[in-house]
Image (tube, rainbow, N blue to C red; front, side):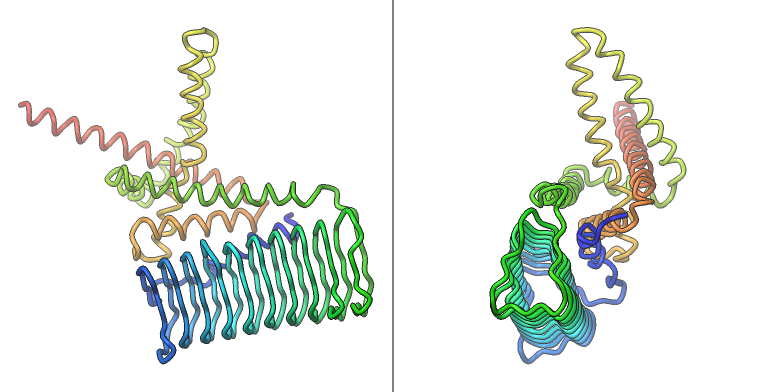
Length: 377
């Protein structure tokens, strides 16, 4: 079972999909997507662009994939998304905020929960319920209505917390203005720094960390980078092999059983063919190249299956690229949240996806061969 800190990433990432019925949503794509101060969007808004700025009102949910997010107006529903740069919530969000960004600043009001993954998170406004945080540095100088649950290198609390603080940190500091209604539970190698003016109504309880926070953080960062690497590799593959990519995704939907059998054969047979090559000096370089290709196939094999799922969710809108992004987030989020089924989820996507890619490549080769023969004839 995942710990709460491990579950944070799953909740944050999976939450990006939980409220994404793109079938009926308003989709906006552009360099800068802006909701002006005098505009009211009366549906869910899905924005993809270099910058997303909300100064007006969004009456539904807001989902973004952007390099820079600013919410200075009001969002009646949830705010979810992936932000390559800073994310600033200076307005009002009447639902929850679930985002991953380079840095996150909350100076406005979030009525429900905040689930965030970032290098730096600052809360100078208010969060109505729980704050679930994964970050390098966290500073909470505002108001959190219920619990703070976090994993961070350094954490400062100089505001109020309505219930408990449960964190894993290297350094925990409670400032003079800190007020914690419940208990403070923390895992760390050293004692927390508690200012004389800090008020904790419950107890301050420390448990020794079995592994340093940086080691845990490295595994989390690697997991996040693997997701982005998977998406980037998929986008490059779709651009380089447009026809084969579309054909492979089509095979997932029309012949998943056959694709799974082909994928299973590729996964099992490849090592059997590679191992004998290591027995000779001439065969070793060839074996190493084939082994590398096999490992790459294990990593990228799920691409067609994952993209097909994503396209079904977005109903074909946004092309293969959006289908890949949405499908990947859903798939990896499910793996995080359902550890008992993680191996099955990965294996299913791998076998069907890899098999579909091989079938599509073989059919493409046959078509090209047939066309060449007919021209010669």
